[in-house]
Image 1: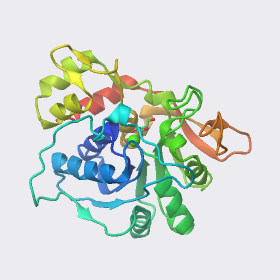
Image 2: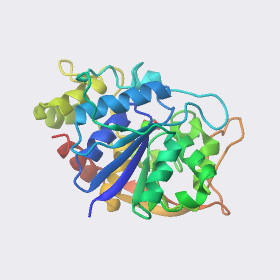
Image 3: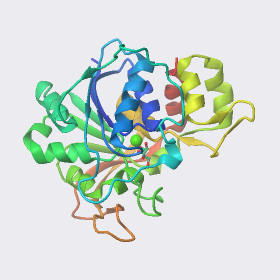
Length: 308
Ligand code: RIB
Ligand code: CA
């Protein structure tokens, strides 16, 4: 049986790679994709979801919906320096006019999440790879409905390692800590895929040369362009490696034993200040399965083999 999944994302480069992996994995059936403000503004996220579906051309068109354009509290932040102005590192994707590889859902993403949960009780795995605003809004709207989700897989946080926005906080959580706290306290079964494990999975110039370039198809070309890999100079234009944060969250659903987890009581710092968005282990916090170890080699094999 294929796992029915809904992907909530802020397409950005690694979100885009996660979508390719999800649709190229026979273990998964992607029923819906929802967009949230994050790496780039919501409008750009939604355009990127459509661009990626035009590239992937899924056999079964998923429902897509727009979600929150700002966090529950505070200002919207973005990560253009990492993902580029367009959120896809400038990668060029040909979209044929009038061709749509999706089914547009006219209402808010939080309503699509709830629709899926009610329509497929205890079958939907929600893979969240952006700020958790849409999930928190759905929980506020219909907590009982959200309890019909089978499980959540969340890319976010840094539990026993440094953050990537501040020394203490990771981008998805820092973008909307209040939403993260609401989701963590929901009682839903959560597997958290934090920087503790996603910083162990990355593409290097050698991988690009030996495993990506030789594929020679539209997907490998997208990886080259979106990651800013210079095929002449054999390096990434503005960094040493590309972390595969979001694809690991998808892979953890494909093959759960890839990520070694520990059940930890967590809390999120929602007060403004130095530790804003920090996740800490707190004895009275909700218990969450936290990824602390990963079979990086096995993950890379899964990711690279599914670019074809
Ligand atoms: O910190 C990494 C996460 O923040 C990834 O999901 C990336 O896409 C950004 O959203
Ligand atoms: Ca993301």
